[in-house]
Image (cartoon, rainbow over all chains, first blue to last red; front, side, top):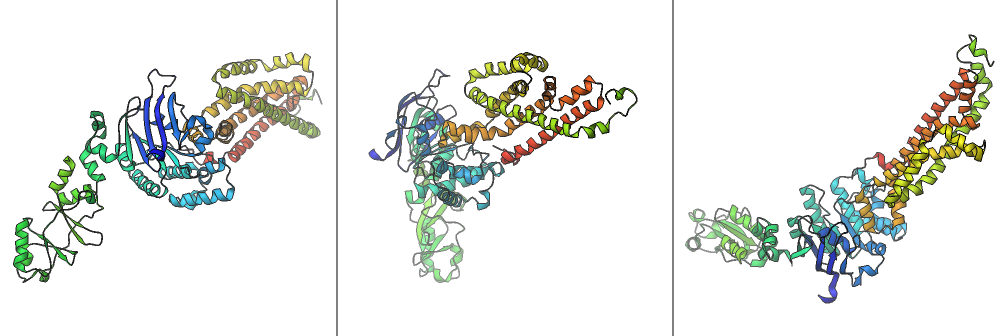
Length: 369
Length: 224
């Protein structure tokens, strides 16, 4: 990665005056440009402290922290913070300023002219799907989800390359949280910010992270790896416990059908004779076969459909109640398998072109690999 | 007319009120001016002391101790002490009145600042507000509704206290109360006290309106 490191913490220690044991001890971590690193761990693991040292809301006792190659301790803290987007769980919108002014906080502080601020606020409101008529309201008049979105818009306002997010979607109900996460992932796909993200929720970490750092008490890193790797091979018992139940299922949620490829399955074409089709059904032993016409998936037939016809083309194939695509997660494929009568998922391309099948054995081999 | 009250005259001497309407008006204005000046000066002294105590914990106890001692001195005694030095002037009355506002205002401003939600402060610091910007653009504006409650209390208290300053000839409506006492003339005492209460009620109502003006957001729910 070399030059591409945007945030780097090296041997960082924080000892608070009120406590003998360090909150964070000799921690090293780096975030590449455009990458989202999620710090996750139980409460008291120092994840929030670690994050706050990056914008110097907490001053490190020892170690070096650089943002874009510059030591943060060499910078004026106020200037430093204006260049870093900051979102916290309680959001902390200014209750005495309307939404417009709240979103425009940092541009206002750094002295943009009114017109430019107004344009930018409009742009962000559109990006986060905040209605124009919300802009004149006070934060006390917003719903929880709206407040969180205003908080994110505010952090993005001056277009900072780096964002610090401390449980930014923590204060809303699970359904709203999911929506906000998806929306933010969409935005991040376009903006490519460098993000240090803190949460105690492993599922959120898996969803948001390019890499996850799992922290134990005292800011000790137990494992620092991409989500898929952490789920596949947890470094130790602490990580295994923290990742929790359904580790295999969570991992299947991260892998797509394209990652493991498809298997061959029973296929017949309209031109195939009745007895040939019967043989295909018998050989595979599923009791049915896919019907594919010139590459396109038509549906399926079983032996009873062939009773009064001379060739497959005269039978009428039944549509699949569900099939999966290469973009589907293995978790979705698994769902499709266990709900099908014959424990097989049919895989097709987006344009309905037939690709193959996926079986339980194939997926379970992937889980245990 | 002076001793008329004793001999079966009506309880309220309306003609006396009519004859003295100019005087009543002038004294009412004086009353308001003294109150206004005392509260404004009190605020000017309290604000920096309160902000300093808010930021430096150690300063809070001594400053409220001094203000507390001033507050407990009987007003009559305070004027008596001051008189030899400052004379029968408005200045004497003001020193006394201001010193009574300090405890109320300082305690209120400090409590108001401490009541500003910590998440708002943290977010504001995280976005790059400097200490000074934080104070004037976030902490003071957010503390304003509670500070205004203190100003209302100080104002109403001061309106009552001004009457005592009549003893040194600067008492606004208190002048009538004193006159009534000295001459057993109930009409004057009533005029002084009723108008004084009336001024307090009006001032309080006006300050409530002012508070809504300066903090329109506080009406619309301060959910955090």
